[in-house]
Length: 361
Image (tube, rainbow, N blue to C red; front, side, top):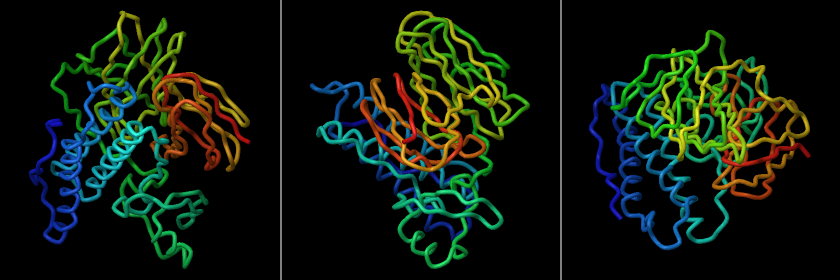
């Protein structure tokens, strides 16, 4: 099935000659992923196709477009690693699509290697601390795990936010849209929406902060961000599951405003978007219940945990760093019970469209 993707990318950046080989490899990976999308046999309208399958295809297509955007322009070499993160998102989406079609369990997901995204998928979690820093659990490739066992000083992370370092400054994103762009506001409101307007929420003076999206009635909403820095995805599916929506979403560092679009399924329910300090994030030690997407503050220690989910589509539990940027996905799956390991005390994001519960065991 043709999907209008694939093909080469123009080189529009001033890299030095010695970087050309590595850049050509990344470009080839983007092109190959586009060809894989073009050649995939799944069609959204085929018999037996489900909303979950269509959502995974949409996630893969979004990731491909994001990888192309990340890799074009006058940028630093470290920024090109953002394209690898987007490609990783797309490959995981296709793997989930294949699993859904075949009736298999959804594949487990480890993040890209903490020290260098070009190392590929991490193989294990290890304890590590930067010079003079605190110890934390990180996900590394098999080769870096061996190097760390031989001597922690043998490896240092590559510069840039994709290394996963707490406090890494996300790079500013260019807002690219052909739709009307509103002026930044401290509070944004509207009724319904089909995504025709790109809104801008002015960032507060305090950081870090969360975006609070709320409705005055039951609703189903997709919230799509124009930039992806510091996020695992640009699309957030929000649902009140019979009640009004109150969803918290991390706001990125290093921006004066965040741009987003609202897609409301039917009706003209009123909605409001504001920024809020971290004191409004729910805190817990042993357990917490919720509905839809939210940011939570786990105050317990490392150890086993249980995520229970009763909603549609997938649920994801993502660990955030101390600036609320995406760090690692710790649990993911469809409706049911999922066991995982809490990396430790900190902020986490639940991304779902239904009721869930979290506990430490």
